[in-house]
Amino acid sequence: MKVLLVCPNRRTIPQWAPFFQGLSAQGDMSVHVLTSRMTPSRRRELEASSYYPGGYEMTEIGALFQKLSEKGHSAPLVFSSGINEVVRELAPDV
Image (cartoon, one colour):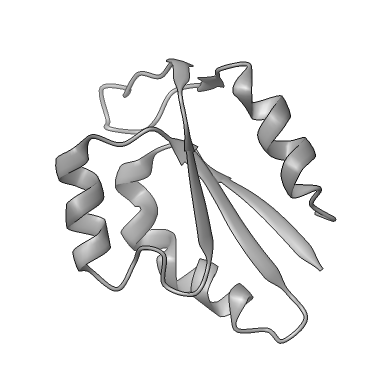
């Protein structure tokens, strides 16, 4: 089964990584995470850790709007129109 998860705030990937890895460890699941585009320094930081890709695939896509609230929570995110192509290409079951 192909599972597509959306992690709009790329800074939370380390917190969610155990969940992503746990799902991908299931023999019948292929997990793909969609997130907003990262800066090169953030990408290197995640690649150097066990969080990225860590048993799951990840696709970065441009975001048209994303803002952190005053409490540091991610506000609504609108992905660029490229999301349609990503979803069609991955053809997830969930």
